[in-house]
Image 1 (tube, rainbow, N blue to C red):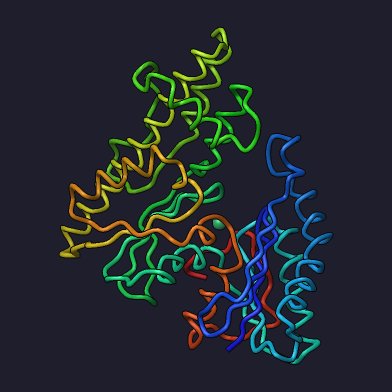
Image 2 (spheres, rainbow, N blue to C red):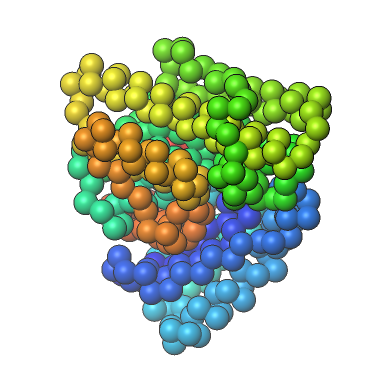
Length: 334
Ligand code: ZN
């Protein structure tokens, strides 16, 4: 079964051809235009998708000498994400499916991330997924591969977003995650005491926007030199790690009380490319005898391979629906 999948929920234009669960070709084009604006500009993102998506498709099909009639299923991300960007990818893919009279299957972007580790790992249930991206910070329980339950999520900024915003406040270029990581390796992680919102509350929800506000005040009253940047980056990274570890630990406690023994956790999304967070996560889970699973590198950030895989994985559950309307706020229960 040959699947043609597109992903355009934010600033990555991606197409994947997947044949019987094997990636034939996968292209991810990261839009550079947002760098000079210090963050993703939605209107520019949708225009950029529009400019490039057709070229990527033609190149991909030509390279593999495939023709449209060879494709069995067309799939596209239909939410959540930026409305304009979602519309470009989904409308493009829908028109191909209509033109070549093949089914169109709408895919939830979150399901793409959640199932991404099952492409290269054997999943044991019950299983938890920690989703850490620029758009989402969520904790899910998977009782089996069909039943996905949201346990907790950020009530304000996503973790990747707060990395970028804090970097911007310190005058670092976008995307800020890498800049913070680079600076943090030279700094003292105990130098600044930053707030950890919701950390002592019973809820499994998380909150990060208070940190950003605190950093803003610090920046305004300080002399921004290299020492300040390195110490603040290191302290910020440690604060984020503490929040994530505390909430994960709380999640494990809650599940244990429900007699759900967790042996594996999937950590997905671009934020886990941060080595400091990754190494400390690995230490923490090793101590708790929990195996940590990651997706393939190419399925880490936003990409169409995870969309093709989510389509194939739930092929019996996913119904073709050419009339499906994109939904920027699509949740896992929709
Ligand atoms: Zn994503």
